Amino acid sequence: MHAMVYHGPGRRSWEQVPDPEVQRATDAIVRVDAVTICGTDLHILKGDVPEVQPGRILGHEAVGTVIEIGSAVEKLAVGDRVLVSCISACGSCRYCRDGQYGQCLGGGGWILGHLIDGTQAEYVRVPFADNSTHKVPAGVSDEQMVMLADILPTSYEVGVLSAAVRPGDTVAIVGAGPIGLAAVLTAKLFSPSHIVVIDIAESRLEAAKNMGADVVVNSTSQDARSVLDELTDGLGADVAMEAVGVPETFEQAVRLVRAGGHVANIGVHGKPATLHLEDIWIKNLTITTGLVDTHSTPSLISLVANHQIDTAAMITHHFGMDEFDLAYDVFSRAGETGALKVLLTRTAHSG
Ligand SMILES: [Zn+2]
Ligand SMILES: [Zn+2]
Image (cartoon, rainbow, N blue to C red):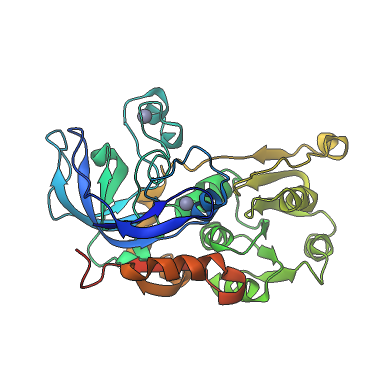
């Protein structure tokens, strides 16, 4: 088969590799029908995630068809259409028993495209297949579903649910990339009074408006705190979410929130950020961080199946899998190409 293989910082190639095989009785082999690229894959390619070894197949999001199951797989059958979650779950360790699958101690967690071969391939081996996949309901497209592998549950759990967004809240979201936009989509489920999205790229702010942001702020020309002050009688946001992953935007999120408010960090950070305790110790803030657990995926699937959220709107570019190199190029130059999420689908001559 063909797969996108990491060859060390800055180097990747779509190349011929052996097909995956069932290694443990709880594995399934899934034919990948639709797959996407995550900002985290770009972090890996920059060398920010040194646990990823050269030779590793990238990718942790996919929708596909089960083609083989191990002898201990009970809930899946050959031919099932499934979502392959970015988080695998052994199902029985202390964290899995608590629904915190991202912290799995039994060999799961974020392993696909990280510690084991991932989904940017024609076929993928999915460990703990019963607990690490979700069946795709009839009527839900691959496009809709693949967004639920990572970004939707990440923004929903680590952003919206951690921050406990409530009806009437003023919610500030720093960063209008795919994670920030997924935060807009899922924050709206709680009827906040205002969603204010802050970014430096006009194309992304436009996308945020289309996703349902009430106010957008280009922080190169406008002061986000003043905009929030106007909306909240000088109090600040009830909730601020950081959806970029650089020190400046985390520090900005802390400045935007009111006393008693909540800062939810969603971004993946590679450098230390400053926490100004000398200013905020007195403000009763709650600051949360996290890796997604994907405990919300069944709820999100039901929201999509019932047309309460439209995730396909996040996909800006479509490619065949044989155009994987081009797709990476377009996705990594998002500033110029306007790419949010790119979707790659199986092509006629994939094999
Ligand atoms: Zn990801
Ligand atoms: Zn576990």
